[in-house]
Length: 84
Length: 278
Ligand code: SF4
Ligand code: SF4
Ligand code: SF4
Ligand code: SF4
Image (cartoon, rainbow over all chains, first blue to last red; front, side):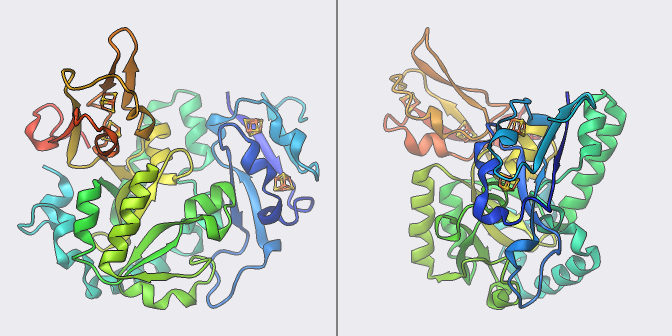
């Protein structure tokens, strides 16, 4: 069963220094990207990094990511049911 | 025969031993294609090094095999033209360091994305060719900087990474231009993960298949943790390691760890049923 996983970018401000969800997920569902793409001659500011659930097929629904996120930024739901 | 050797081998034993596939003139082709495909083609921009979106996973979930197959073929077709890899052995990787220059040690984009790994822990990837001289244009692609290596230094690094258990593979950047020598593992390598979890061939099997000699295997099990492709297991009742040759990617990592020399690498082409299993 595929979950719906959302990450609130407003709450998750600097994922490159937090990365708690990336590391705790037992099946490595999350990935880090940027909302600006590659920038020529410029380092991307940490505020432009975003977390996304990409390996949805491997989410067991354990909710470890939801529970560990210090910003309450992650929601995981199955069957379109209530997000936790 | 391997499609890529057939198309781009030009008489060399493997397509990645053909120096023409590392040539400067091919680098231009890559640039045009990369620019034409836009920022969306960049996994960093899309987020999380995923080759497929949730539409693929949803089609798979509802059992729509026709749609899954269509999307798979479409993606493979696109990747084979632009950016895909093939597994190679340590020996082959070492040989490439004598064909190609420059070679540089860089941080791995996949582990950066999947773990947010700090740069200093992440120097496992190798970039090759003219593009490396322009690394400063893309500070985030080459986060942590670039260490240019002599061929001997490159050999030393590759041997160390092999000891750590990382799989070597060679990647195109605008096929057949070869510019990446990656050292990867499951689950954070996007290519290994995509081929193993989803069966989408962005990483081709290598030219070898591993084989265990049950007479020589003493059951020490030290090879078992080396396989990143779910090909190697252990049979407790016989106290022997076991290799599923149809699943084996021919990386040779198990063989380099076996001090009994119980594992040998056989040419894929010599096995009729496996010769075309890539
Ligand atoms: S619910 Fe569990 S398995 Fe699913 S993404 Fe969160 S940590 Fe990973
Ligand atoms: S745990 Fe929460 S705040 Fe930390 S990186 Fe993940 S989503 Fe962002
Ligand atoms: S390392 Fe060699 S001897 Fe030990 S289990 Fe594997 S094949 Fe057998
Ligand atoms: S069985 Fe050995 S050679 Fe084959 S993929 Fe696994 S580690 Fe590599």
